[in-house]
Image (cartoon, rainbow, N blue to C red; front, side, top):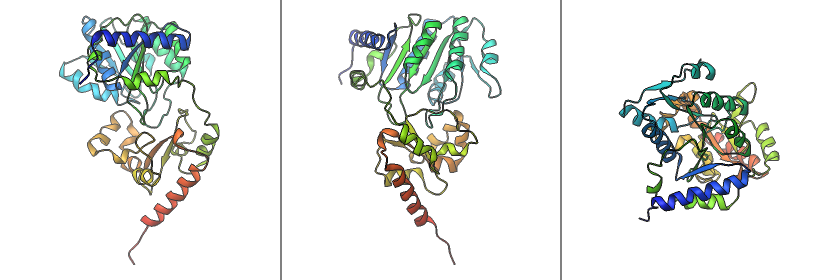
Length: 324
């Protein structure tokens, strides 16, 4: 295996930092990882070791599976954890933190549906409040944007993990300021970071214009968010379908979509699906998990939605039968 040594990994991160600083017109520090699990482990346990006099951490179990991946490691080390309660707002939650708190790990989006859980102003306030207490604020979201640069101007203890989407998790970038001085624990042991390098050289930072497709998606009877009285704010990069009669996996197969184009919870092993409600309560519904399909908008065109409806109608008819 061709492992990156510490010097090459450091050089890669320095090049990334320069590249993104130039692209966004602000001083940014960037670290590269193969996936968001490596990034989370490296960040969290690096901070716990580097700031060992601050053993406590905060966990917000909403929006991302990253927290669930890390919890067994925290439990094994008997790390003092403080979870945010569902009926508790962030101001109340943060007010209880003392000088022994190291960091808080939280998410601003639902990684499956793309629902935006917190507005930019709310995110900004969380980072500012934690920075005021000198507590690192580790936010997990799918993509770092130019707007996020404003957070670092006011919050030196902010850390943003660009975790990727359910369609592609082959790279993860961590954005931070000079305040994060922890050495990387496992960064230089990673096998390959080619996906990260390719991602940067593509200069793919501007979202494509999906306005027409999004309008069609909003009008579709299969749009998952039509279940809500008021549609929540969502990321503009995916179409979330929900059917009571057709499994998401069946629809995905009929559409000939691969894992980089679509995601269906029904194709996951039961033990993984059973763990999702810990960070997404609605996933307790087996009917929802069976009928959900998330499609990357880049995999669709103007005729796709009509084709989806036609296939859905055909599969519904085929699966509807009775005994007389």
